[in-house]
Amino acid sequence: MNDTICAISTSQGVGAIAIIRVSGEEAISIANKIFKGKDLTTVDSHTINYGYIIDKNNKVIDEVLVSVMRSPKTFTTEDTVEINTHGGVASTNKVLELLLTNGCRLAEPGEFTKRAFLNGRIDLLEAEAVMDLINAKTNTQRELATNQITGKVSDLINKLRDDMIQIISNINVNIDYPEYDDVDIITNELLIPKITNIKNQINKIIKESQNGKIIKEGIKTCIIGRPNVGKSSLLNQLLEEEKAIVTDIAGTTRDIVEGQIYLNGILLNIIDTAGIRQTEDIIEALGVEKSLKMMEESDLILFVLNNNEKITEDIKTLLNKLENKNYIIIINKTDLPKKLNVEKLPVDKCQIVNMSIKNKTGIEELKQKIIEMFNISQIETTDPTYLSNSRSIGILESCLESIKEVEKGLGNNVPIDMIELDIKAIWEKLGTINGTTYEEELLDEMFSRFCLGK
Image (cartoon, rainbow, N blue to C red):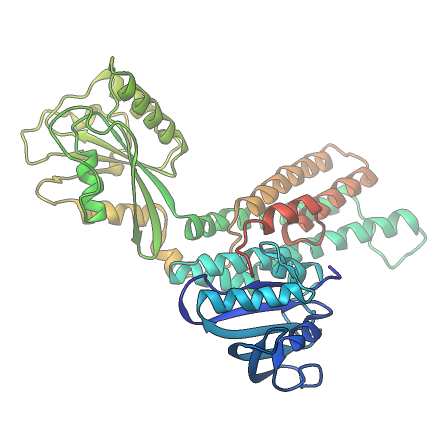
C-alpha cells in the first residue's frame, strides 16, 4: 500500500479519450516527470492542467489534460493523478509505459477500489457496488448499485449491529458492575423480545434481498417438457428471433440453448432444454440428464405440455417434483383437438397458461404471469435498497439461524453470560458483510473480479 500504482481506467481500443489513473504517495511527482506544462507539484488540488506527455528525450507523446487531486479528498484517499489522453491504443500504452519506467507499479484488478476500502473511504458493500454499477444494464440495476454505493444498504447492517451492541453492552455492565442501580437488569425474559426483534429485522432484509438478487442476476428460467411439445418454439417467441432449431423430428434439441430478454427491466435468462424421454441415443440421453439438472437449479420452470397428447406417467412424476418450486404449466397447441385432461394434472391449476405458439397466442399472458409471480411490477416501482450478492445474503442467512438458536437458548434459561458470547459472535459475523471485520483472502478473491484500473 506504500507504493504508487497506475493503470488504464477506460476501455482498451480506439476512442475520443482514454484515462490513465495514478494513485499513491509519489503519484504527483512521478506524473510531473513526464509532463510538460505547469509544475504539477505546486498546482492546487482538484485542478485540470493542460500540457504534453514527453519521454526522456523530450519528445512529445501526446497532448493531454492532467487532473491533480491531493489526499485525502480522493477516491483512494491518496494523492491521485488522472491523465486524459487521446484514445489511441499506441499513445495510451506509451503513457502507461512512461509511468511504469518512472516508478509506478501496474495496478492489480480492482486495486484502486481495494485501497479506497482499506483506507476507510468506502465499506465492503459499497466496494462491491462499484463493479455492479459498471456492469448495470438496466435502470433498476443502476438504482440498486447506486443505493449500495451511497451507503443505504450499509445502513441496514449498521442498524442491526447497533441494536446488538446495545444489548451486549448492557449485559456486560450487569456482569462487571452489578452495583449500578441506574442500569436495567437484563434477564432472559427482558432479552427475548429484543432478540425476536433482531430476528425479524434479519428475516425482513433476507426476504427483500431476494428482489435484489433478481435485479442483479436476473431470473434463471428453464423450459422443460417432452420432445415436440413446442419448447424451442416458445424460446424463439420469447426472444422474438429464431434462436433454436425447430423441426418435427423428436430429439432435435440435444443440448441447452440459451437466450435473454428483459421483462419490465428484469433480466430473464432463458434456457431451452432437450426433450425429456427415454432414449437409446447416448448424446440425447446426456441432454435429457442435463435438462433434469437444470430443472433443479432454475429460479423458474416453464413446463410445456401438448394439448393434443395424453399425459404420461413419466411426465406426472416430473410434475410432482415441481412442489416448492416456481413454475408455470404451459399447455401448448390449443389450436389442435384436446386430448390432455387438465384435471388430472398434479399441479396448481392457477399456474396454467394456455397457448398456441404457432398462432402466437398466450405469450403476453405468460409474461404477465411471470411478472406477478416475482412481483416484478413492485420491484420496478420500489426504491431498491437490498443486499444483492450471494456472499452477503449467505452470511445473513447464517446469522438468522444463529439468532434463532439464541432465542431458543433464552427460552431454555441458558445463562446470560453464555448468551452474550453468542450474540457477540453474530455481531462480528454481521461485520463481515460490510467489511467491518474481514479476512485478507476474501478481499483478494473479491477484488480480483474487478476490471483493471478500477
